[in-house]
Amino acid sequence: MSPTILRLQAKTFNMTKAFPFYFFRWMHDHYAKLPLHSHDFIELVFVWNGSATHIFNSRQFGRLEYKIYPGDIFIISPGEEHTYHLDPGEKVEIINMLFYPEMLESSLLFESYQAERELMDFLYVQPFLQKEARFSSILKLDAIAAEEVMTLVAKIEKEYTAQQKGYQSLVKLLLTELVLRLGRFYSERPRLISERLLVVQGGTKDKLNRVLGYMEHHYNTDFSVEQLAEMASCSERQFARLFKQATGTTVINYLHNLRIKRAQKMLSRTNEKIAAIGMEVGFHDISFFNRIFKRIVGMSPKEYQAGLSRGGELEGRTAD
DNA sequence: ATGGGCGCCGCAATCGAGGA
DNA sequence: TCCTCGATTGCGGCGCCCAT
Image (cartoon, rainbow, N blue to C red; front, top):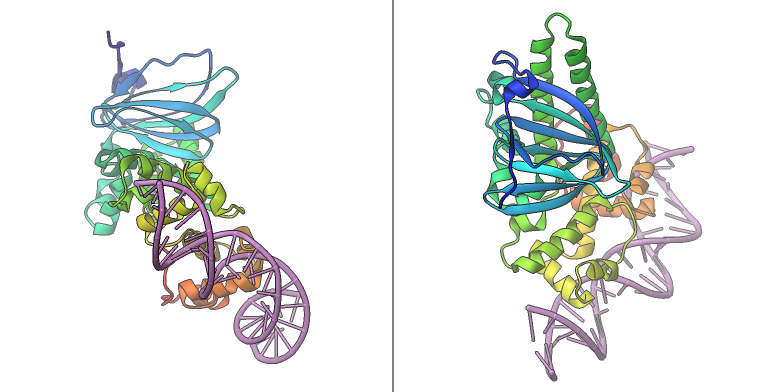
């Protein structure tokens, strides 16, 4: 017998037609059982603290489970059934924003540019495409992006709580900005192997995805091909072969591209010294960082930074 | 599809010189 | 002082070939 699914509706959260939005934070632990539930609104989830296992039932993909950690952001679309499981001793603090599409300033999103429409992939398109995309629609932000997002979330929370004159319009605008920014981070994130991997088989694809996920989040630490191969449960030789087959490049080249891309982003967003940025993205030697940067981007980090500060269009290539 | 052997290539680290 | 570039060196990664 299948479990009863709790169906949550707008009236549960006092959402109105004029302002269909609800903001709340909640703490969850092993003892507080949240039943499997679904809703007819969009749920934007920010993991603030702790960890949990997110359990997700989908008509398309069946039952999915994945671990969530601080900084993770994901969307639960209308009709999707989900809940959380926490092991004894485990706790999680989550920020939830429940809303209907009417909350978003559609004039800003849909009428102007195709680019804005593409940003909305994060909300509507990607989660329905394929099983792997469901996982990749969990955004993991770097420190700078997370700060931008959290500043916006704090503003929304402040407006929503204080409820001063005009707060509904301000929350709409802030939520629209938040979704656009998330869409931008989503489109800028490194592509998972599975999204372009057509040549390798299912089980292998999962293994490579696990490794690529590791590389994306540990790009600035030292690891060997041997360790990665172990993670993928295959020999070094086989791993290197599959990696090349899947990505079109070698492990080291892929890692360099990842590091340089992050370095480009940092150069454009901070005033940190080039040497510090090189170290931060995982290069032990500034000389070697310069060389790799120039090979990939087509100009030295200094030239790249100078180009940014002039505010002009950069001709340099993008690491990808 | 997968793994092993072998040899070459280039990454990564280090040092030094020179320019802005 | 900071950044870039060149030279050098040890060793790990990768391509090729062949076997299972």
